[in-house]
Image (cartoon, rainbow, N blue to C red):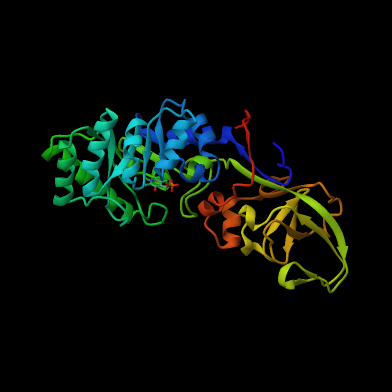
Length: 381
Ligand SMILES: *Cc1c(COP(=O)(O)O)cnc(C)c1O
């Protein structure tokens, strides 16, 4: 790819498949898996991730956050079911019905609108009901009122309740209690649907990444794996010895200029770093415009020739400076590792998140559009 030398992300697709396999190994037999690939697959590239996972027999399909993301996957030829986890706006319903994309349903006005759209499209549209058991984001309530909503949904023509789901707010936190309380409420509600409405919703799902690692007893019919697909961790409180995961993403840049500066020189905007001695400074072709956190100014480091090179001064939009005084071999054209492994040193997405005061999910999602993604598939596991 032209221009990849400036900065590029490398995605190891075999890690993606291996992570999915490892997670599946932790679920009860027969549990389906949905891969959450919102925000362009957490910055990794939704189409490529979906193409790798679609052939796996236990992968039911995919979850996106928006209808637009789901439609792009269909355009790319992805055929398995896609569930939109957020609200789908009514102007998309007809197209959604045609494309076999499942909306999350929780608003009164959705049932009739969806029914009309499905009729126009000439299909019966599968939907998934969202239930709010403690996240307080979207969803019907698991009570009488919610049950009446489910009844109406079951009676609405042209749609079919294929799934029902809830989302955990604290599955990545040490105490299991809040998650168990949410799971109980959800199971109680689906039990009532079965008993009082005589309908067994075919796909009941609640576990996210943290849940599927820590609480396989809550897997039900399907789990929704997000951050762990990419080999990243939901939080430090999720034990890393239950399901082995391998990060798929590495991020690289390049040394474009090297010079010596005498003592007393200010570096970058605002001159927030001043050399105390003669310093060998390398300029790197990446910046916050690529999604590299500006908060790493005077704080972060990159890897060059297997060694740490500290960031000097403020990170610019497209470039940054590092100290290579202790890396005598460093030269222009050298590969720079921003996230990943070089020799004995590794910078994880989690470590970079900690150092920059950002969330690892956010860091991956924010790697900019102008950073090319290069895909690699190797045999090593
Ligand atoms: C984002 C999301 C997920 C995936 O969460 P991870 O922590 O990345 O596993 C699952 N379900 C819903 C409803 C979501 O919004």
